Length: 326
Ligand code: XMP
Image 1 (cartoon, rainbow, N blue to C red):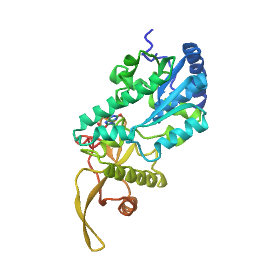
Image 2 (cartoon, protein in one colour):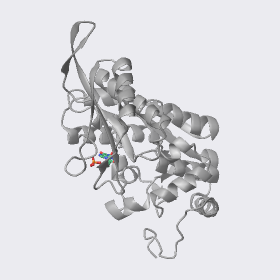
Image 3 (cartoon, rainbow, N blue to C red):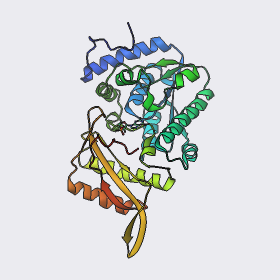
Image 4 (cartoon, protein in one colour):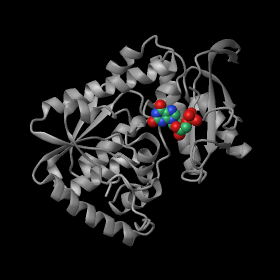
């Protein structure tokens, strides 16, 4: 039987009881596969890698080393949450690498979106490989592959930029959620005690805020993306929209527009808000955000985010616009 094909008889994990049974079976299977071997896992903080980490912690404890690479393009508070959940609460072996400067230096002056993606992906592998070499005796690589990854990209978690890792490092793969769909991974994550904000996290691209700071990334504009995104997320959560709207974020394009403040003319960036709904990310519709909420978010962004004088709402469905701006 092909281990990458979900058997038709497999029950969909929709309840806590079914999740508990899955966890029990997987922990036993992981113990059997790994024995007293060591496993390395690139932990992004996304739901898939977080669930794999939690399963492995349950199965092999300190024989798992999680590596969280901060590429400098994470959302506000994201690295802190990974450290707090995995190191402080789950007592995991967690290596935190703040490689922000390395990534941002490599990206300086690069405006082509695909080139930016390539640089981020390649640098991620470099950093991870360097960390892997510091840990001796590792035989296995944990990976948060889920079933749609297998169906769509022949088993390579291309979006997470770690597709080339197992080959380069010669590791055996450990992929305990590879036959699950996203909604099932979330049910399992909740039963493993992961926080709600992690389990129901909206999709976040591998290149992170890098594709929302369009053109050549600068540190000040990146900060404007990060701060405006944090305000948007906070206000959507306050309005009860978290978990209801599929994906929402801000973009700060690489041009300035005129504004006026205290009688002085300004030359600052606009912030674009994007909020969309979809089932498969192939097409998307725009969320009808209440006007009052948009106004509140606009006021906050204009008063709290440095270098910004204008807020726009993106009304474009996919197609013909993509969800991300680049
Ligand atoms: P687009 O912009 O193509 O996005 O309509 C569809 C979905 O894919 C996400 N996306 C990415 N995810 N690496 C990722 O991991 C990427 O380079 C990337 N580009 C887009 C996007 O956020 C949306 O959910």
